[in-house]
Length: 47
Image (tube, rainbow, N blue to C red):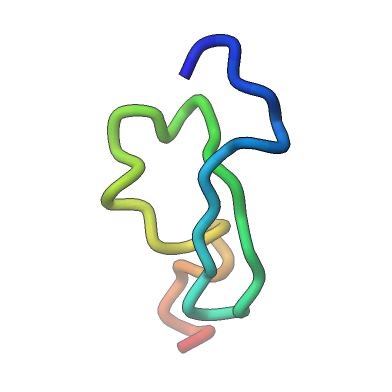
């Protein structure tokens, strides 16, 4: 995804908070597995 403008990054919706979040460089190899926007949304106490 080198040279991609920020406005054209893929997005997903967080199932916990319902907010959209965009692709990040650190998720490059695991983007298909990313489900939550943050560690806080991923923690079991929010479910």
